[in-house]
Image (cartoon, rainbow, N blue to C red; front, side):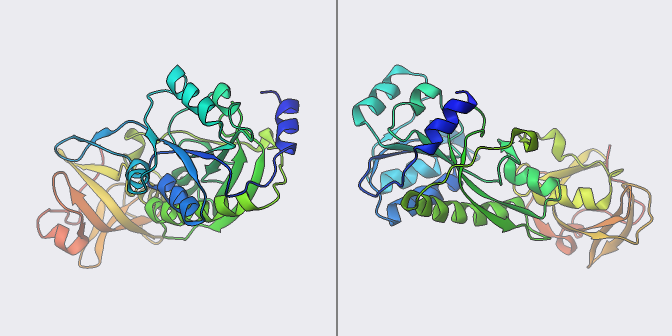
Length: 324
C-alpha cells in the first residue's frame, strides 16, 4: 500500500464499538493480556487466530500458546494456520465479515489481502514508540540501546513491517534495573488498556516519519555471549535485556554460565574478564571500562542462584578468567 492510500484509509478510521465483530490474532503472553482486556471490556471476539502448538519443556510436548489457552477458557473459536496466505483462513474471515482485525505479537506476517477483509482493516498493538524499534524484538532492543523510555503504539496496519499510521500512543519509562521480562509485563498490561481505550475513542491517525525508523532485529543466542572488552554499562544492559531469553552467557574454561542479575562497579580497573573480587557481595569482573558485580548466576544444567550459593558449588576466585 502506497503512502497516499495508507493516508486515505487511515483518515477514515472511526471509533469501534463493542457490538462490532472482532477477529483477534496473537500468540504469547503479551497478546493474551490484550485479549483478556478486550474480553473484560465486553467486546465480542468472533474468532481467534494463533500460531500452531509448539514443542516445549523438557519432554518437548506440544503446548498451546497463551492466547489459545485463554481463548479455549472462554469458548472462543480458534484457528491455527501455518500461514495467513492459505485459502481456508481467508474464506473463514470473509464469511465472518469482521469489522476489524486486532493483532498483537502474532508472529506471522499479515498479507494485504487479509487486511482488506475487515471493514476497518487491521489494528496492531506494538511494544515501542513507533517509528522507533519496528520489528521483532522492540523490548530487548530498547534496553540494549539504553533508551530512557519506550511505550505502546496502537497502529493501523498496512503491508509493511510496523509502518502503518499511529492511532494511539503512550510512553512508559524504563527502570534503571528493569529486565526485559519486567518491562514486557508492564507493556503487556498497558497494551491491553490502550487497545480498549482506542476502540472507544475517536482515532486521529498520524503517518509515521520513516526517516526516524529503527529496526528491532530478532535476538540471537550469539548476541547473548558477553564480550568482556565492552563497557560495564553495555554488559549490564545485555544482562537485563536477555533476561529471561536467551540469558546473558559467558564461558569459564570449558563451562558456560548464565548471568541473570548484575550491577555496574565504576571504580574497577581489572583486566576485561578477570575476577577481582568474589564473596558474599557477589563476583566482580573487570570490563573494558569499569567492572560488573555478578549477583545471580546459573551453571549449565543447574538452578539460578544468588552469588553466595553459586560460589558454594562453583569456583570463581579472584584471578579466574571469564570469556573465550
